Image (cartoon, rainbow, N blue to C red):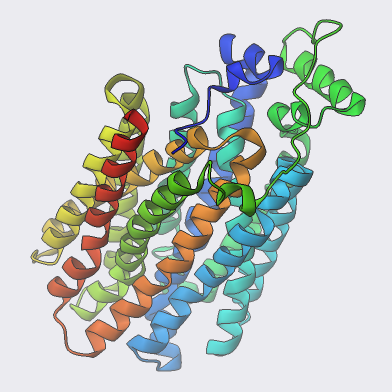
Length: 442
């Protein structure tokens, strides 16, 4: 089985420049843009969970129908990750990100116009299309603009943008939803998303690693211009770029003999961990509302989970080079199952918020580790495609989480048991990474 791809510094002379030198401010800006975009993703994804109590009340829908609404955005994310993400390896990271941002803004604004379950699900699918392609691309961007020393930390910062978006968005709309209705959540999200288009257009260059893989004179000219703008020297005359790969963005290559086993283990672990996360985060506001807590209290509890995610994700990104990425990732996934089971046993708002905070540390620590592992495991010409495959299968499978939760609860299963059952998936995912670690070392 192929192990993680070789360091980018060893693959082409362009990335050797970035890998060995201190990060310049334009590189830091590119990573910061990736963080901000993932924060938008975090708010956009969680917006439907913030709106769930209001939608249920206004439309009189039951748990099973709400589960479909919660999962509809995941349908779009699956399609976006599987269909749009490979375009980032074929045509560039930058155009993919811009196009996905337009889809996200349009989908959020149109969701506010929904008058029933069908139109709500349609516009959540459109939003999900943008999110699915976006996340795969920005994962590669945060890795490819970093130097070797800061690569895992850069990916970690990008990933914790998600809980930052959920945290800030949760507190921002907690009262807005009371005064202006659930539609205001999507209007605010759509406007914030569209406002990022100018920053993206002027502040995000094309990935140098992507350009280096093109092997054309035009790509060489663009590389030199970007290097100079970043404060690095242009490539020395006569520098030979890596030849353009025969296949860019190929699922056939990912599932071929060289990468198949690694791909399946990574995708399986991501699938199981993300399924548990989407069940918990998707149903958290509604479950607390059913227990008698006010909607703002439920949203703030979800935001406390996001706060834990910021801390847990940052800690894992900092600690990974020191203690081992896969080892910490496995511990985070075990902690996810344990904390989810513990949450179901809590009573009282303070206790529930405290455990939600601990759950956020574990679950987002696991997500950070998985994204960092994806960025390091696939070669440049398959990086966005490989990440998109994992996200697509994982988020497609995550549709099972909210729907399964609705079915289990409607069938009479207690909240603690339902949370523990679905949360056990992260524990199985940790087992897959143990296998991956052993085979890579072997």
